[in-house]
Image (cartoon, rainbow, N blue to C red; front, top):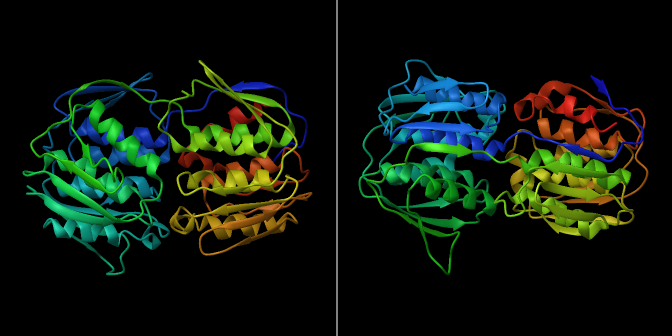
Length: 421
């Protein structure tokens, strides 16, 4: 357990690790590429290490250097995995690698934690089955473990429901260049988290693959020609806006100025939108060439559609508990299928702190006030731990249980956190 120091923080500049979402996608595209890929700035965390380990089980050679990750592209010559591939509770790894395994060789078993076995993936399975990929759930419940038989995939037309996760679409996009006839993908529902789709497409194009999107429906119709290949090269991972959010929130509730270094203003990461929400709540946001600063001000409640930045919901909810008035968060039903049911988890822990909060099927309502100290249950969810650390800056006696669950995405979070004081 970790007791958060409740004291004034200083104006600060912090550096956060590389984007988890970019890292997963670059690792996979590099593994499928036509040669040597050097990736700098990649996130080194539990989740990204699971993706690397899975690729190694598929026969990909990888060198981990102090300043880079070197991946030897296989041109999709992936080998059968002799043992089940364990992916912990990394939903990104499970979904994206399901598509990767489909174009591999032989049988792959993808498995994970007990919570992973409760996270739905049947929408992706249906899409893969539609293009004759053999994949099914071991427990016949629409959740992992999965058994996937890889091989040559002809491709063709398929559709996908993306109300739970846009990663189902990303999995299809990433594998599409290695199908014989390419893929034509129709998104039937959603998608949620649209910026993550842009990120996937950007990475594919950066590695030399053409992706066509229908102009009138850029998030619902995609066409990728078969017979393409990701190209080897040197690639950089930009800092993670999700991780930056905790430090911007620290500024928002305390009145300090906190700058997160090297966040580009034109990033595709949807979580940068959190700064605009803080601006609506009363903060000042300063965009600079070398980073983005949030300057805290007295906060007021807002109404926020957070469909495209669901990972930031607990962070905003904690900040809203110190605001004047009511904050309404909408269109985030997909939070129920995250590392924990984040809607319920966030409301439970805010309620412990004396905050009037409630959740619905697709959102949350928080009445700002004066939170009190409490022991925060993290549900083994890194984002719950880091979000509620913010509350402890203004509220004495906030204790984070299982504080090292942050290793899932930000192993040195507590070291960086201490630099705020």
